[in-house]
Length: 235
Image 1 (cartoon, rainbow, N blue to C red):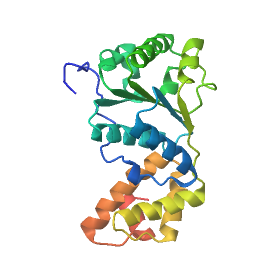
Image 2 (image 1 turned 135 degrees about the vertical axis):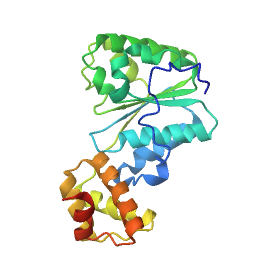
Image 3 (image 1 turned 30 degrees about the vertical axis):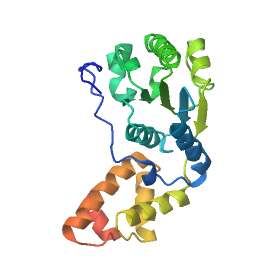
Image 4 (image 1 turned 120 degrees about the vertical axis):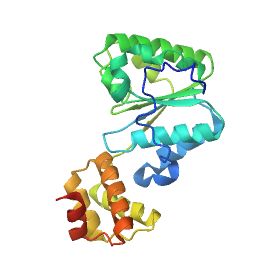
């Protein structure tokens, strides 16, 4: 994308992870939703894809994976996390309608913001009318969201809506073991259980901790045992 397209005041790159890909997501009970998402991206058959689920269900990961997927198709795409850009107001959307697709995350943050809702409503219309794709990530369905602008709620209900289910504790443990295997690490079940309990279902924090442990294990050439984990993390 050209630098002239995006307002240079908006830090669009800050939360974007190029390593967030579909292959690094354990679908589990969300296999059908992930399959429908990937099929829609491959066919470009929707004008709106609305992903929602509780924190830790993988909404942000899959939005960024979608951005990576679309970029591999040669499309100009941007990931816009409102957790970082909400303060800039709806002007953060200026110029983005020129892109092939836009992924807006953390949309629940505008539930009490009439200016943002109005701006997103018009942005949606621009994207739809020009045949471009809008992806949205949220913690609740469009019909359950507390938007004060009824027309926005209607627009956000008009596309493909996919719910992501939160992993159970057993699925989280399996995820930690699976994640380690993908990186060539052997993580015993007791270590996985220890990490899951300490993170209290915060999977975003779990990913950050896992990256830290991975680096420490490689640097010191040590297995991830509970004593080593406590040493590295200062627990």
